[in-house]
Length: 296
Image 1 (tube, rainbow, N blue to C red):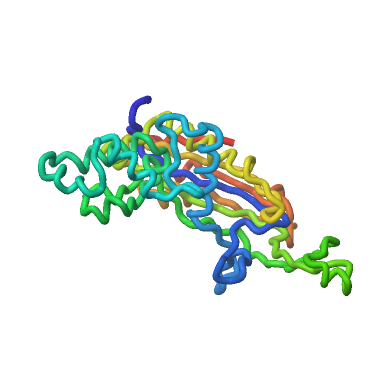
Image 2 (cartoon, rainbow, N blue to C red):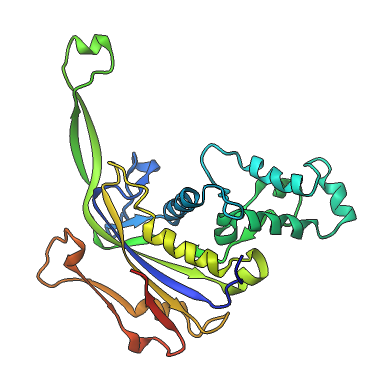
């Protein structure tokens, strides 16, 4: 693998949805997530991290060093047990091993970070090790995301749909179609902000320059392998990256985020496409030691 990253980063992602539900709320009948006070749309960090994991899993196909820890149909303790196998021990004997070898915690953490891309990137809570009273059960990852919020308030629309296939023979005697509903947002542009700590990469997970390149690739393409009728048309429109000159950074993150301005064009009342917005980066608000790049 390449070298561990040495610079702090912040980044801004702009993505949009057209006639779809970008992130359903299970507590509200899977309706699109909306801030009830302001009406702005919300997409959780967990939703976006899931798409990044799916992309990496698809392109790397369990390549060594790029396995995914949080994945469908794979119990976490099955992945945790690979660390025990590496140390030639098991859950029952690990406490005794720890008495003999005080570096067991570090060895397990390094093994899990080295083998699983998402642990190395986002961190993880590994319950198996927590229950075994090991200090490596909680790993704080260098890459952190906030919630995405729409640039303007959104309106969720309920669309009635019909299906010609009837569920049962009895129902078919009385009707020829069945009714259903789906909830969509006609259009919304979302903004998400993220952080990458070179300090945590160096001290904890070993997040490398190659991992960073893969992260950018995954963010740019995360919706391209995840299309569905429920989500409509989604695409990443902008990825603005700020690279600091040193490990602890050159300025507070909010100053960089404030330099990225997204606003609706004056003559647009109801935005329905990305071109209805204007994106500006005010370089005069950014220190000269911070490098700006637009990945898209």
